[in-house]
Image (cartoon, rainbow, N blue to C red; front, side, top):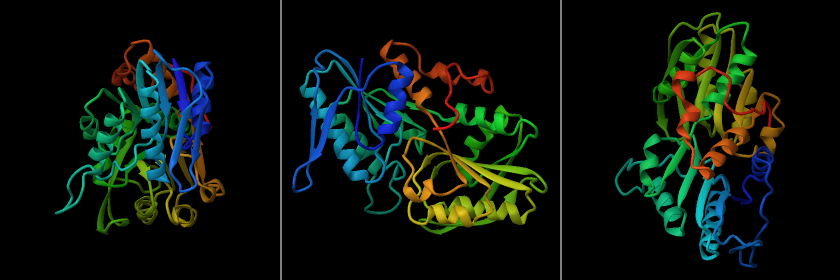
Length: 326
């Protein structure tokens, strides 16, 4: 087994290799004078089972192109199997034709990865589950929920909080975690007037004098999250925190979080935090390196990946060691 990393999230790649007890195979990732990307694998990969780790986060286009070139380099180097490990899959939010003459970019990105020569994809918390079907190669979509549940249980052992979905689309995710910790569920009914701007309208559920935890998959501009937190505060919630998998944190997200009613925002390391987020005291990071490392090991050894998320064992200790903070 060989593990390589792109430039998007080297810290996560180092943590994954440390968990597996293997070293990172060296590669050169450089730029020509005109900005074109150059990739060279510095060790023999012929006949090897290769995993290339790359989140397609900002700058999305550069990281996606780097991933495609690395896959092509590995294929031309006669790697036996190439698995694209994409902790954060960019362009996933355009997963359907939302209007006339608009692209389905999630499908296009999947086509590009497949055409480049990937044999398999391993990703985390896709924005829409149907994106798995956009790939014509085996695709494993992991879930951060077991790690989030473990942290919630540890941090809120003295009191069962109310799990809150910031919109109707995230109810299934919030319900899953609420069921695991035997908590109540609340939903924010919101109205979005235009892309990137959300207005919380109504809170469905009892939150007065309760500790509330918002659960989402992506925090982008943080508009939805902060509007939901303010709505909960207006309804008398005693304390409000949030858990999410992907910390995109674009624009003024960090400032919005700092100015909001949120007391803490917990995210994972699928995307490295920007400088503004690192300066934000409300933000805490959990590492998914053990979970990703275990999935890589199981794929390499031909074992089941789905058994890591056996719903009958939700809430039990994780079947692999967890790193509390990245």
